[in-house]
Length: 405
Image 1 (tube, rainbow, N blue to C red):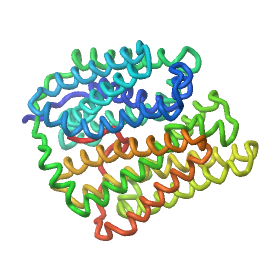
Image 2: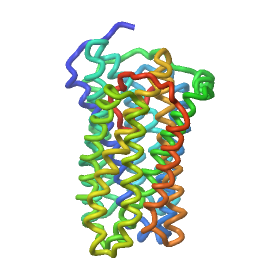
Image 3: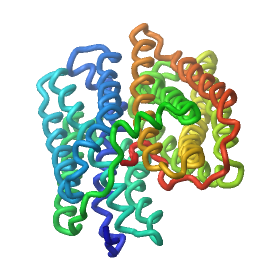
């Protein structure tokens, strides 16, 4: 298949699509309290919106990749982001909890179709000489969503109501659709790994150990991120209006951690980097767990220091995890990285579910201990396995939804 050359600026429309998907994915945590009030359901019940999305994405991504393997890439991208826009409109008009849940399932399948296809399109567009830069255009959309999209979505939700946030994301997705159809040329479908190929690789002990670390690491993050508003309110008496600045700080630290994680993996190797990042994440979670014991007034500075450390370390781990997988099986890196994408979303589902259990028991202020438990399990898994990891360059673009085909 010939490499298609062109300005990387044309890929901005894929970046916009990734930004829309990332914003919807991350802003939902800040909207849970208002959704709980409007639908008259518990906070843990609306938290299942995150669990359902993540689980559907994890299972749906490899299945959708196989089902759409023969579809021309621009057409697939247009269908996926168009479906994502439609699902956001349905979410905005949802009459109740069940309708919003159904919309979230469609959102997950649409995102699971778009993100791997966007990464594949960009990689082919850039060719060997510009592949990394082309991929970074797409993944930068996810990074920007963490830094700016999620806080902005929460601000819109607080000011205008949560339905307007979904309308805004629908508009972003529609704009991406127009740009894809108008500015990107068709691209033939490439080779896609079968479900059997993916399962065979997933059964390898060394690969399975790395994937388990990804699941546990992300579970720790989402056990508290999903209910961050409730946690901050109970632990430090912070109002919902304080959440957007906290999310901005978390997002900036995550972006820095993504970059540092790749640099550290280059210098020290993936396993050492994951061990260091896991240790720092554990320290951050313990601080989040102990902070509430100081009382609401004294807890605030402790939490505001621990949250950036949490973002920095947890996202740095995921960059190094990609490096570990590439080092273990460089000849099938695309398959192992797609498995890691599914592992990330399985971790998100598990973490949100664990957080829901704690929150339903009235223990939102204790979520730091839940996250610490996952982080400790991930660290022990790293120490127990993977001693033969080889030093390798990390794949570009660590934010979770990037995926691979």
